[in-house]
Every structure is written in C-alpha cells, then in structure tokens.
Length: 326
Image (tube, rainbow, N blue to C red; front, side, top):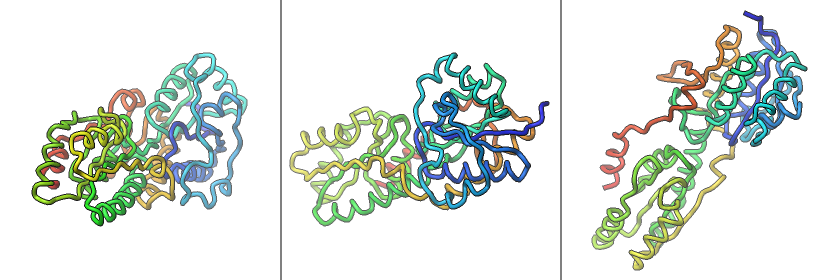
C-alpha cells in the first residue's frame, strides 16, 4: 500500500452549516499526522481548473462557527464526462495528491466513486447535506442547524397565526426528502406534515380543517416539504383557499435561510468527528467509503451503497404525527 503523504479536501453540491468545521478537522488532523493538506476551491470545478492550494493550521482558524464553506462550492457539468475527470486527475497529480476527502451529498459521492474507480485515487465521503437523505448515517452535517432554523421561524409564525386566527402553510426545504418537514413539524406542533415520501391526502386534510373550524380551532399550521407532490406550499395553499375560502390562509416559504447561519453545537461536533475519522480512514488504507455515525459510533458505508440507497423514514413517525396533532 502506498504511503499517504498528500491529501486534499473539497466541499461540493449544496452548502450546509458545519462544512467549515469538517474542513477544519480534516486539515488539522492531517497536519497532526504530518501530511500535506490541500484545499480545492469550488468543488470538482476547482479540480478541473487546478484551483488547488496548500493549507496550514492557520488556514482554518476561526471558521468552526461559520456557516457556508470557505472552500466555496459549485456545480460542475464537465466532471460528469470522462475527459473532465481525466483533467481533474492530471491536476491532482501535479500536486502529488494521494487521497481526497469529499464533503457533500449523494451527487458528490457519485462523482467521487466514478473518479476513484477510473484513476485509483482513494476518496472518502463525508455527508454534508441539510436534507439528511443519505443512508449509512443517523445524521448529516447541516441537518440539525437547518431544522433548528426552521423551528425558530415556525414558532414565530405560530405567534402571529394565533393572534389573527390564521391557517399558515409553511414550506421548508426538502426536494426529495421530508426530514426537515418531519422534524420541524413535530417540534412545532404542526397539525399536518406533507413530504415527498408519503402520498398527500388533501381531501382528508380539507375535511379536518373544516371540522376544526366547526369546533372553533382556527389556528392551524401545515408544514410542507418543497418536494411535496402538490407543488409545495403554494400548491397546497391554493387548493385550501379554493376549498376553504372562509379560512384566513397564508403561505410562507422559508427558503434559503435554512442553509445559512452558524452551525449548532451538534453539527460542529458531528463535522469534527467525521473530518477526524476521514483522515484516519485514508491512513488506514480504507478506500471509497462514506463515513457516518450510526448509534453514536463511526460507521463506514461503501460509496456506491451510499449513492444508491436513501435514508428511509420509519412509518412509526407518521403514526406519531397523526396522534400528536389530533
């Protein structure tokens, strides 16, 4: 096995609070083990443009509390093609890089898997996505912060909903996964939670809203993941307004505030653990795995399985939502 001397770290795909903490952990753990650590700007795009630079311990000073990513992130269509990946490999070889830590989601891992298979560069994936939609880890970097941001916003919306006896339809992020909607909805006492993983029975929701009105329960919160089949909060709100015109219905889309902000303590610790474990894995000769945490223990999942599998929502959660909202 070739001795690891030079490693690189990049952030790819959508940004997530805690990515900086993960970068910091990779850099400082690598330096502790006397490795040369390089940062790659703008994800895979930086590989192709050779935007690669050496990092020192001071390069990651005062970033653990910052949202976003100091390494920036971008989409890179050229990396989908073999010629693009070949150019990326040639640029890594200019810096004698022996292994790469990729912080991102399933799309980023898919690119890492193909790249590693074609050019024999060990890649370690760290799950950095607010959606918590990757199998092989109980939590992903950024999820806790995004949920807490959503909860804080929804709590404030409930105050004004109560003051005016209004129904609010609130959209949270989650194009393909409903975890933010599920967790924030339960935490804020939402009457209904709509998400991509479960078919939405709007007829039942309308009937319940009409029953609530008859018993003078006029304050209702509906939390909707953006990927809901009815077109997100706007689609759901439109249907409710048409079928329940007597209700004072408002739509609120939380949007990208869920991506930003200082990471929570939970996200900082998770990111630090995973970044530390990523360097350990490279030094131990572990290749092409995503590192997660399962039952509070570091867990390796082959990148191809992490890409193909999705984090399933336990049906018990739907029962909990139904009971607690009644």
